[in-house]
Image (cartoon, rainbow, N blue to C red; front, side):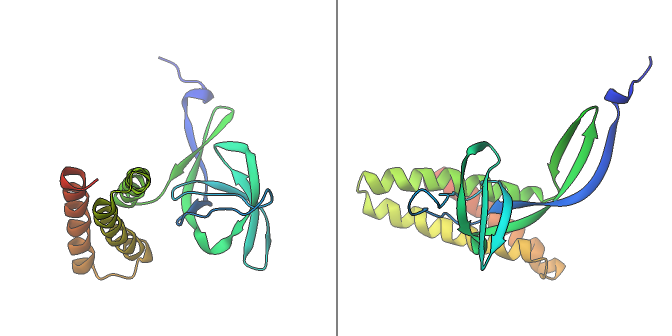
Length: 165
């Protein structure tokens, strides 16, 4: 069996990738509306604002507040002629982000259907997860608090998926 260079992965470098942490509704054509979990490419920065586009849809571009974007660590691997971007983020943080995106869609449907009690329930679940996600990302928790928080997050996601949204 022979290997070619296209079969081998090389870690090129560590970098940062901007990830949206709060929803933003752009006003007008010059602002870019974003949802939690979107990945953006930043082209310019100015006075607390970024100008850029969505990585998944380069046609959607505009300005958005820098405060809603978190720069996350990524690993860039070279595979043949292509670069592959991999998240260096904790799997639990990725799970929380995915869950928040799913629950956000459900919350919106409940809101449109005027199911006020359920809207409030889902909103509370989401607020807890957003707060805990911030704590996980801070990197400042002692190991025992970190383990405890991981358990709380996992339990909340399980509870929410079973009884919540």
